[in-house]
Image 1 (cartoon, one colour):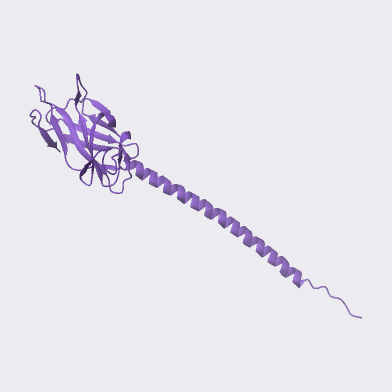
Image 2 (spheres, helix red, strand yellow):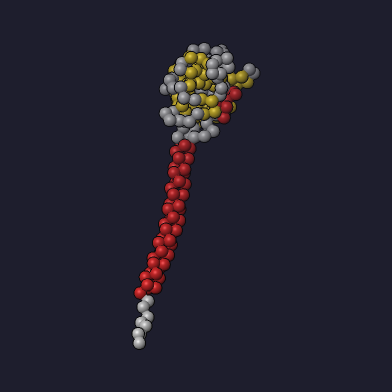
Length: 201
């Protein structure tokens, strides 16, 4: 009479396989979650760095000299205009000039001008642009474009410009809507002649 012997080797192997598969699945899910969290944190850090750099640097820079004009009245001992050229900084994004403000300040006074309150002349590759140009001139300062800004010192009947006398230090701050302000620090010339233009440093 044959005797049956209980053999559970196959069941032990199956259980081990199930446990192994469970470990692999859990490890895969855990690694996916960890990688996803890592990618998210890296993306947020990258966006934060890019935003910080964009806010800390200015998209604008001065091109060429800063020129001031002496007042044409009987007392030309102060400035009546400040003119300078603006262009995009290297790698800078386009700037909507309609949202740019200009602040002229001295040790005693400060005045702020909107873009509509200044005179502007646009150039593309050195050629003057206007509404009839092709392509038509708009208020977006783009690559290869340049705009001449002239801040007027006075309006008929009232003086709005801070008083800038000979040898006075003054600052023109150009503030775009995105990015850091561009400060232009200069010293008025030691002598003024009525209606004369002077390059300042």
